[in-house]
Amino acid sequence: MKLLLVVDNHLIRTPDGKVWSKGIYDYSFFSRYLAAFEKVNVAIRIKDVKKEYNGYPNLCSGPGVNFLPIPDFYGIKGYLKNYISVKRAIKKYSEDCDCAIVRIPSAIGFQFASKLRLIKPLGLEVVVDPWDFAAPKMLKSKFRPFIRVLWTYKLKKLCKEVNGVAYVTQFALQERYPSYVHLHGESKKYFTSYYSSANIKEDFYMNPKVYNQKKKKFQIIHVANAINSFVKGHKELIEAISILKDKDIELSVKFVGDGELIPHFEEYAKSLEVENRINFVGRIPDRESMKQELRESDLFVFPTHGEGLPRVLIEAMAVGLPCISTNINGIPELLKEEFMVEVGDVESLAQKIEKLTSNPQLLTEASKASVEKAQQYKEDILQIRRKEFYSQLKNLASTN
Image (cartoon, rainbow, N blue to C red; front, side, top):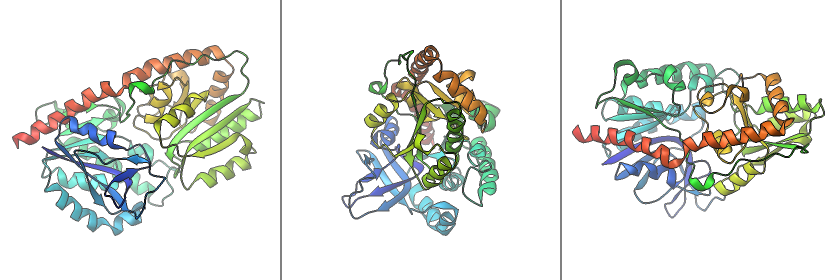
């Protein structure tokens, strides 16, 4: 049984035919679908290169996983220019599969899903809320309002039409984008599930941290692989650090990730005279180094504007970091109210940071709570629900 998996990302292919990633994707991600299917064909944007790229360290190729290239374009203009090429890819790739799963939302994802739902058993994996992702001031595109309205409409429509929908949240995304099952009930033809995209194995977890009463300087960490928009709250965190600096609180922030907006945020930090407290360290590609960077920090702060259920937040919790984030989408499923702020509320963000860093006992308790909550997102636990969802789609395909 062959699965067509549609993913929105950018990979490279080296002359030896191997495919590589610089983000969250690697072979372990794609091979999880082999729990139910004999072969997985991955349709994704791929760029052929003539030599190995150091910036793409994660090997995606492996047994049972085959990559089907989509042109490697960027942005709405690039998508429109390659629309016909994507349309041809849909026709070609759909002929060699028994069913499909589309990770959504994305322009490519919507185009594939709209066609595939008419010809193959189809499942969606809903990973982000487009209404929040494309909120005002979040994307550097004049098409942002159009993207927000269109993607929200399309996602609502598709969730009601396709056979299976799996959400990264337990409740949040389901309420805004209900599936056929939520509206009419489950059957062999229509089914739903929820599971995180996180891939956190047992050896990533650590014991809770114990904070020293005499500690005066604190290291905050923020992680976002792509720093190409305002969605992840870099601006708000820089502003909060400026407020706390005026109160003589010793804090520094380590921003992990790379992207075109780094110079903009560095200039913004300079304009607020906190550039010496802000450090952009680039992308950390391997999990062990990321684990060490997280553990060596004191607090994870993630004032995001749009998520499903953020993997980076769960990873920070798994290594024992107290966490502050925004009260949006699935984040309330991870954090208590005392550790959340409303989107864009910089004053409250600064107050939450101040409250935690001035109370080592509270930090220690929050660290313990983080580890306990993150236990629910271990890979072996999530994979049970994933396999059940995949199997329902496979069984449907076998009867068609």
